[in-house]
Amino acid sequence: MISSENIVYLDDSLVAVNKPAGLLVHPSFLDNAETQSAMKQVRDLLGRWVYPVHRLDKPTSGILVFALSSEMARLLTAAFTERNVSKEYLAVVRGYTSEAETIDYPLREIWDKMTDRESSRNKPAQPAITSFERLAVAELPFAVRPHPSARYSLLRVKPQTGRNRQIRRHLKHIFHPIIGDHKHGDNAHNRMFAEHLESTRLLLHASTISFAHPGNGQQMSLQAPLPQDFAAVLQRVFGAADFC
Image (tube, rainbow, N blue to C red; front, top):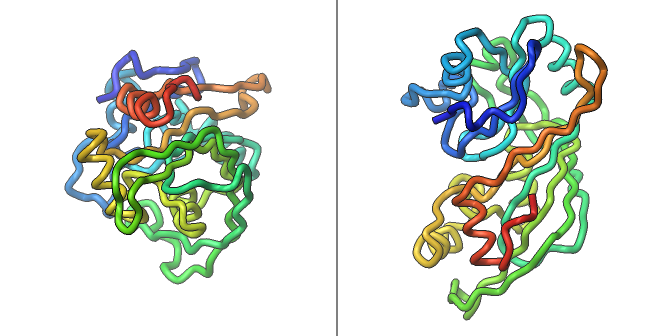
C-alpha cells in the first residue's frame, strides 16, 4: 500500500513514489484479477488525478513518476521516448557475472490489451540495450543441483532503452536470471532463496531516476530507498545493505 511515507518527491507538476513490490502501476488485462494499482493509490492519496509516464513491472519495487497534468504527462512521456531519462536498478542474479557488460539484444514487445489496444500484436523485435556493473559477489553453502554451493552477483543495472521486462529478459538471455523471477528466472535458485533466506520477491529495485524537470529545466536525480525485505537479503547474502 502506498502512503505518504512512499512519496519521494512532490511539486505542482509531478510526484515520485517508491512503489512496493507486487503492485501494478495501472490496471492491465494481463492481470485483470488485481483491483489495486499504484496509479489508483497515489490518486487517492493526493486527492487528484495522476498520469503514468513510464512503467515498472508488478514485482519490481522502486522509483515511479506520475505527472499531475496532461501537459506535464506529454512532456515527461516525450523525455522517456527521446531517452532523456536515465534509470538505475539493483538486481541480484544467479552466478558470477562479468565485472561490466552491455547487452545489445532486440526484444519483441509484450502486448497488453488495455494499454496497447491500438498497436499491433505482431511488431518486430525492437532494439534493446542494457548495461550493468557488478557491485559484489557471494557464494552460499547451499546445494542447488548440480552444484554443491550457489553463487550470486549484485548488479547496478542501467537500461538504455525501455522495452517490456527488458532487464529481466536481458539477464536471462546472458544466463544470469534475476532471483525471484518466476517468469524468466531459475526455479531451483528461487526455491533456495525462499527456503533458506525467506525471500520470495523479485530481487529487482528501481533505485534512481534522473531527468530535467520539464517545468523549470532543473536537473533532478530522485532515489528510492531499498525496501526492508530487499535490504535484509543483501545483508545476509553480501554482508551489506547500503548499495542504493
